[in-house]
Length: 179
Image 1 (spheres, one colour):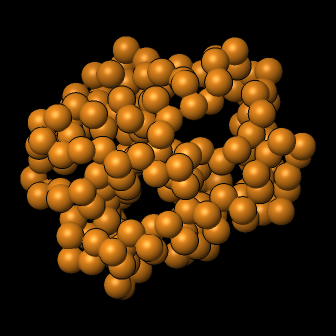
Image 2 (tube, helix red, strand yellow; image 1 turned 135 degrees about the vertical axis):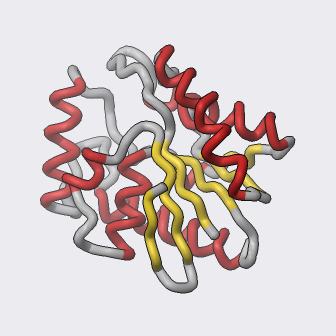
């Protein structure tokens, strides 16, 4: 079984590089609370985006169950330059859901991000077949994967996906369950 985990609440600051954004104090609490939700799942392997906020979300659980976190570059957030504000960023993200080919200078299109993520999840799902694994990433990345499985998953579902979130996915059947 694959458990897709969205990172906890982070601090948006256009002056901090995307990969270095940190968890908010609420996000740090959420990361600790996530342990109780994940412990019963008998996780055998943890893969994560290399972004600091993603690693910091899953690290308390990994430490609790004594598992290493394997960083996977393909699970990074969609490539994009800094925006002046969260609102500007959200407008660009919405447009990218309306047009999967939309690609302002310095951005990765949703189509490109989706292809990268889906390929890696499929590889890991085959490699770790029969194991319970965590793929720890970002809301947009997880949502693009879920969109590939069920094209009704779009901007509205991405926007409603909580931080953190845990989504159970069965690669063999394509079944999606939100936990």
